[in-house]
Image (cartoon, rainbow, N blue to C red):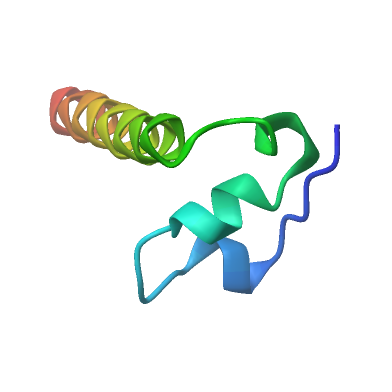
Amino acid sequence: MEFDLNIETIVRQHDLTIEEVLSKQMFSHFTEQQAKDVILTIKKMSIIIFNASEKKDQKT
């Protein structure tokens, strides 16, 4: 799987776009609605992970 991890991909100033999702080979066959769902899923997972991390930090 292709994955570019660098400071620009970690610290984003804008949301992931449908075009960015569809440009990845594994998502290239998705519809625009499916790409929107991918973006929403990533946002939700990010919030869950962030909140879990915050709770862990508060306990220590």
